[in-house]
Each structure stands twice: as structure tokens, then as C-alpha cells.
Image 1 (cartoon, rainbow, N blue to C red):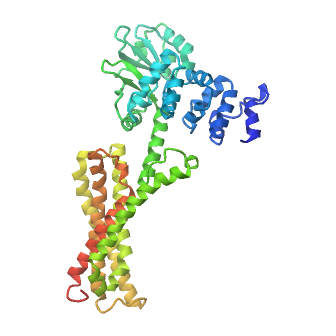
Image 2 (cartoon, rainbow, N blue to C red):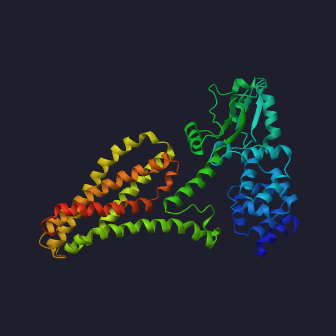
Image 3 (cartoon, rainbow, N blue to C red):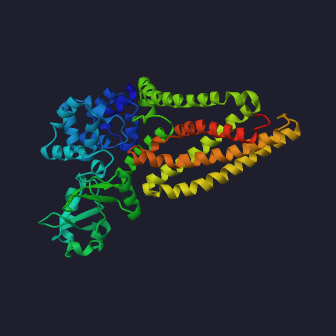
Length: 454
């Protein structure tokens, strides 16, 4: 461990905390420490400062840090932390240690954390916080302001105050902090509430839909309600950002043709790196072996027209590139809600003419290249070079069209059968199109070159 850094935390009492260093910067420093060292450093801090660090999702190995603390210290810090963050930390801990730490929480905090942990991942319930500001509908503006002053340090946000029916506890209105502080003190709280009904979601709503609603309505927080319209918690905009950053990272990993790491790159072990990448790489390799099978099937044609092999890399890469483009567009469209599962046929009707046009453009370029090389004397493609050029042009048109159509439909298929569309990674699409591209290429060659080279 860095002794100088550690002394900044556990040195003289007056030196323990430097106000010029932000919490975010301290989190970055903690991320450089081993879990055991970070646990000792965090335990040496005053509780308020330690909780502020532990509460940040950017602290990569929070569960490991808490797991190496004495149970009584871990329980003290977690009792003061936000319930949603505690739930995230406990989710990552091993069963026995999790049970032990959970038992140190206050009864109310333990119930809230267990409730949050019970929701499926990537739902509104799993990312919401139960620490929000709410008041009865019979209160005045002054009473609400006094309440906000008393509880603001223990709430996730005070920018949205939820007005509840005093009998049913159902949500009846929303008051922003701006409207609250500009209201007359004796005025009823509902007089400064928004006229329209609050935008709400149920706890099983997907996190992508939550993010979309927050963006659409320009909200700082979104209430999560049950069937009786009682507020279970709120999802704040920073919760959504943290969650979507993690989700995007997973999608990028999958789209690169590997399993999501689940940890920062520098924190994952060598064995873990091999395990995450090896399976997908082997699967892609087995898929590429079909390319060799396809070439073996056309062995006779290759022997007769060896010139065709010169364009195999060109043909394969063009089809894979067009498929990857289409896949990227559709995956992003599905994630943003721009296209839905029922829109597959509309997408297909767009991608076929798009593929034909793009393929024709590449085909013309391919033909021009062969003609130029032949005329300029860079390479002699033989007496039937014009037919070879036509073969390449037609094949490119067909392969790019097929790649665009296949790449656009694969995310729909995966979502329809319950898989993450991001699993339609660029390498996977490229592998699929490579094999079919060879079949299209040689089939076109047989038709055009029949009676000449073949």
C-alpha cells in the first residue's frame, strides 16, 4: 500500500480530512487501493465522510471493502448510507457475509433494503431509493418547508416533494422546491402543486423506460408507485445515469464479441479476462470454420478460376461491414424506443433497398478498380476480365443487401426469443455474413462465368 497516501487518512486528527479534496477525487484514490487497505482507510475516517465515499457508485469494490471491515463498523456505516446503495453493495457480497452484515442494520433500514433486493435487476424497483420527501395534503407551505429543513440531510433529494393523501397514502400531487419556496407560507401545499398528475411508474418498469420518461418530461426524479398509487420510492436522474453507464458498458463489451466484464478493466483478474473472452472467441472461431467448409464446397470452381480468390477478402469484409452497420443502428433504435419489435417488417422494407443501393455503389467501385488495374497494366485478370469484374460487382450488390437485411433482423430475433439484442455483436454478424457471402459470391460466379472460366 502507498504509505504516504494512507497517512493522509489515518494521520493526526486534524489531517484526516482535507476539504479541498472532493468526494469524487477521494473515490478515485480509493479505487487505486487494495480492498483490505481501503477498508482500513475508510474505517479511520469520521462517519459522515466515510459514508459519503461509500455512497458513491463509482467506488468499484465497495462490497469487498465492506466485507473486510469489522461487522460492527460495516453495520454502522451502512445504517447511515442510502438504502439503495446498501442494497447494491449487499447484492455483490457472498451469502454468509451478506446475512451477517444485514443483521446489523436497523429494523426499518433492513426491511427497506430487503425490499429493494427483492426486485429483479434492471427494473425501476431495483434502482429506486426509498428516502424521499413526502407530506400530507392538508399541510401548508410553511409546514412543508419546516419539514424539508428537518429531513433534508437524510433524503436523496429535496427538489421534489410528494403530496400524499393522509388516509390512503396515495400520491395526489407533486411540488417542486422552486414552487415551494415562492409560495405564501399560509397557503395550502396543494395550491403550489403542479396542476397535471405526476408521472409515475410501477416497480417492474424497465430501467430503459424509466430513463426515457425522465428525459421526455425533464424530471429530476420519478416516483415509483404500487397498485394503490402509494409511493414506494423514487428514481433520481443520477441513479439513471449511473445505471445506464453500466448498461452501456455491458452492451459495448457484448457488441465487441465478448461477455461483459462486470468490473473495471484493470481490476479483473487474468483468469477472469480469459473466461470472459475465450468462450465467445471460440464460438466465433467455430463459426468461421464454416467459411472453410464453404470454400471446400467450391474447390472445383477455385481450381478453374483462381482469380476469384483475389476478391474473397473484399467480398467477405463488405458483407460483414454492412451487416454490422445495420445491427448497430437497430440495437440503438431498440434501446431508445425508436423502433419496436412489431416494426421488424418496416425495418426490413427499408434495409433491402438501402442494401441494394449501398451494394451497387460498392459494386461500381469494385468494377472500376478491376478495369483500372487491367488497363493500367497493374495486373492481368485474363481474357475474361470483364466477366470477372461483373461477377465481383453483382456479388457485392447481393452480399451487401443480404448483410444489411440479416444484420437488421438479428436484433429483432434475439429480442423476440428473450435475449439481449446487444448479443448480436459485430463479430457474430460478420461471421454469419462471411459464410453466406462466400456462397453468394461463388453462386454468382457460376452463373456469369459458366462456359468461360467455369
